[in-house]
Image 1 (cartoon, rainbow, N blue to C red):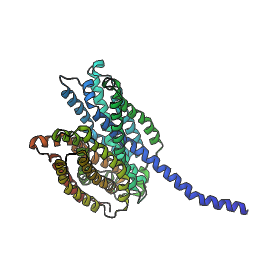
Image 2: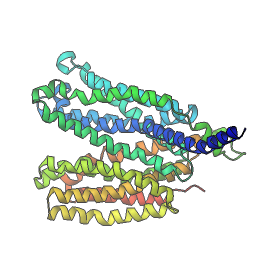
Image 3: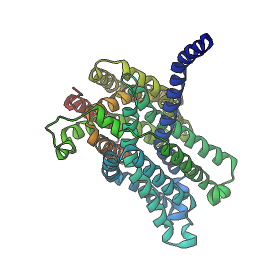
Image 4: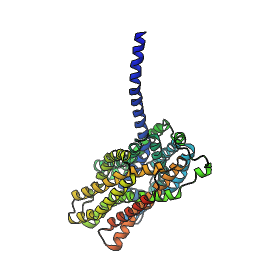
Length: 439
């Protein structure tokens, strides 16, 4: 009898530890499954940008290399155009059928789009069907990516207990940094290891096939997820007098304010990471390889800094104050930062500038996402966030290079990128002021 009691006591002591281990394992699995799709998107973004000239020559032959490259980049932009549509359609599906089935759908569509690009025969082999396959692949990637962020980030937030949500949500941003680093590393390794003829013949396909291989892993992990939609509805019941139609009505003010809020971070990311290397090469004659190190630095900051920023989001009492404070500091630094690059045009200066400005952006991203998600009703949460993110990224990220390039061409000013980032930062501050926080 005494032995049985001792065993029962030991089992009771071990139960909390086992439960904690199981919870930690479940959280890690959920983070990996949810962040995988967003990471795959940035991985594809990076490798397509790196090999856009080769893709242009193989699939969009023209009378000169520049025209082929422009058609390749325009096709890449098609993926951004359909993002808002994906945000609405897949977000609505996630809000009605559940986060889990929506995430299974997006990872399959994303893998299919990646596979189409990686396996497509060239123009020389099948004629006009070749560029059509590339366009279809980009449409599938863009459509799925538009719904991916809303559904995945919503699931992470709803799965976390109070005081832990920011830490989970932050892995969406961390996955972007990690995927961009992985994409750049693989692209550089292939470029150095293979001869130009090998790279153009088959080497450029390797990263896309790696992305395709991630699809089955994402599918497996996501089928094992526990859906958070029923729990969200139980925990955050709408007022009794509200009808189903009222509960599912999209909060237009919150969507507009939320879109304004994310514009600043989007403009900072896409301008500094994807436009700055080419801009510095053209204006200051800086070697593109040296300037491109800014993209690597940004990826490291996102990967390492996002989890810390997520924990800060869980601890901070006044989220709007943090967002406003970091945004004001970033606005105050953006012009001096470009002035420093103009005075000391070295890779070291560029690295410092990128680390500081991307670091400030990273500091606020989990807080902003968490504030938006907690303020939205579960019935429209994934749809609303999908629209906010997709519209913000499409208009102010996807077109950032075109807008900044036009400003620079029209004014001849070295500070054209700073003007764009600052203008978007001011819009974000207005969005913070307009957004209605939870409660």
